[in-house]
Every structure is written in structure tokens, then in C-alpha cells.
Length: 499
Image (cartoon, rainbow, N blue to C red; front, side):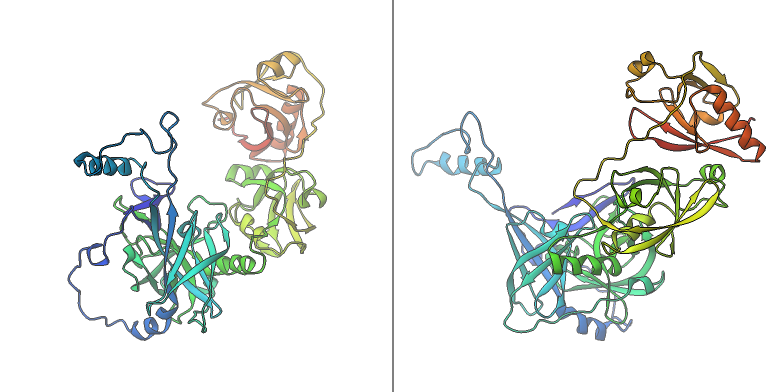
């Protein structure tokens, strides 16, 4: 069996857990080699497992493989025929099917899920049912029901299914993942390798794990989860679902090495409620592009420590723009909650109700300020950032700021054309940098400095005076607003260290 691989780190590899079978699935008895039991289970999980297992289901999907089209010979390839009964007839048919040119045959995948409503609502991972032509749910008592997809959220990898049953189905309750602590005992129930009804136990190994997604906030566990466990529940000792098992780190073979990841129930429950109500996700939206606040940036902005999310640009007509948020602001608090870094803010905003008015504390020009923002709905296509007008006078000669390791030139029409900059671009062009000096790691030739310390600059003299002014205020860094590659301006912090 193969796994869908995502973002493979080295030396281990990260896998989605749904097993993607070949054209024919092996019998369950041959799917794996049994190992000797390690002894009786003395951990006291039996009563808990007996209570929750009836609500955990196996999910199988089928997707018809489309026939490839051969431009010269048609969709079935070469039009070769043999006399009926010829020994070459079966040989050629087998060859064509191995090449994908025979009749359509289903690709089968296996995963897990769990019932959250006796009326037949089932939660699983999006990647378990993605592109499926047919979804079948199998219950522990052997009952099989066809499932309908009510909605999915690929960004967080969740899906909601609906089955029709003549009687109420066993279900399990949501738990509060925010109360789960590192070291708490957990159990995972699911359908590894198509075996069904398998239970493993472990602890929560870590929290707030990021694997590359915009809204990642995974629970890490050492409870063994494998191919086919995708979409299955992670239970606390009260029998409540605190996570949905979604990915593992593997040494390359696809098996468990004790590092699994689950979507926390707090995030999942909000998404599932939206899929149930709307059939789609309606996320909150601020309309800002942000970056992390590093130590140098914090010093340059006068913050006591590196924290918050730095606003790099603002989207046209977005909620943040309407509230007066500006590029260079640092968002410190959102709706009364601290924003420790730029990873936290997107999740906070996404989970906020559309239309809700929230207070946002920002840091601007060395002072804290609070603004009120009405949360908008995240559009399908992110709005383009607003254009930034940077006014300034033109200068002439190239000049060096030796202390920072910069060689600068005021922009001219010829330089704009040479560096493929917009005609309206204004500021100071970085023509060369000294890699051994403070600016060497942050700037590169072709960058255009449009602001220094929140003030527009268009001459080298103006930049030099701004640096001197900040040094007089005992600032350890200067924050520059830089246009790179003619795109949206970014902020960089340059240490004011002349060593």
C-alpha cells in the first residue's frame, strides 16, 4: 500500500494516513504479519474502549480511474485484435490493463471516522474522501451504509459525511482540546491497514505543532497510528474526542515511529459546525499580510520584546484598512487575547464570527493604540494589497552609508527600467551591499528603501539624518520599509551596530 506524502522533512517523512490501495486490496488476513502479544492489558482501557468503539467507523472510497487518451490510437491504445481463443488474446489484455488502457477499474482507499450525531453525521479527514466517486461506511457490527459528502475543508483537512439509518447511531461527544495537557493519557481508535477496530494507547507528546499549513495547531501523540487511521478519533480518558488523527512522521516505510499528529477538537468542532450549517467554511478576515517580529525588529520598533504580528501590507477595502491599520503596525492583542507571534493571528481571526466587532491592540510609533475592527469574510481569492504612495525628492549621485554596508542611489527613470521597478516607485535604490556589515544579511542589490523609522526617505542625506536621530534615542536597530522586485513592500530591521 502507498501513502499520500506531504511536505517530507528529513530524515523522516511526513505522511497522510489514509492508505491508498492498489487495484485489488489484499485479504485482511494477509494485510500484515501478526506479532506475538506482549501480554495482558493492565492499563484499564477496556471499559473506555467498549464504550466508544461502536461510534468509530471504517471508511472506504472508490474512484474510477479514467482511461488515458492515445491521440494516435484512441482511448484504448493500439487497435490490435487476435483470433478468439488465441493464447495472445489474454496476454495482450493483461498487458493493456497494466498500462491503464483496459476497462475502468476502481482505486480503493481506506480511512477512519466517527459519529458525532446519532442522526448519522460522521467526521473524517478530507484526504480520506478526496475525489471519491463512492463512499461507504462500515460500522463495528458489520453494517455498511452509503455516505453523502455534506462539506469539506481542505485547508484544515476535515470533511463531514451523512448516512441514512433506520435507527439512532452510537455517537461520541466532543472534548475540550484546550484543557488537554502534555503528558495526558490518550487512546486512538481506527482502521489501520484495513484491519478495523484497532486501539492504541499513549500520551500527548506536545501541543501547537505546525506542519506547514496556514491554520496548523496539531496535537502530537505517541499513540501508534498508521495508514488507514486518518480521520479516526483521539480520545481522552473521559471518552471525549480531543483530536482527529491526520498525519504521522515515518522513517520512510509508512509505519508508526511514535510521532502522530491530530487536529485539535476546538478547531475541528467549529469547522464541522459550519459544514453542517452551511456546507462550506466561512472564515473571518482582517485583510492584512503579516510576518513575525524578530529581536532586531522589536528593538527597532521600540518593543520590550519580540512579540506580535508585523503588518507588512493591507488589502484594498479590507476590514483592517477601514479601521485605520497601517503597514508597519504590530498587532499585539486580538479580541482581548495576546498575539505571541504571526502564526497565532490567522487562527484567531479565522475562528471569529463574521461581522463581530473586536478590539485590536497595535503598536505604532513607539506607542500602544487600540482600534475596533468589524471582521469580514475571507474571500475565495485574496484581495490585492493596496498600493503604497511614497513621496520624496529625487537626488543625484550614488552615496555610501559605510556603517551599515550600503551603497545607495536615488531612483531615476533609467534605474527603474534597469531593475524592472514600477514607474511610480520612489525612494533609495540599494546598488550594492557589504555582506560583512549589518545590512548584508537583510538587503540586496535592487531593493528600494522607501521608509526609514516610519519616515519616508528619498535622499541619502535624509536616511543618514534619520539614522543619526534614532541613534540619539539609543535605538539599537532601524526599521526599513523596502520594495523588493517591484512587489509589495516589506519591513526589515537593520542593527545600528557599527562594529
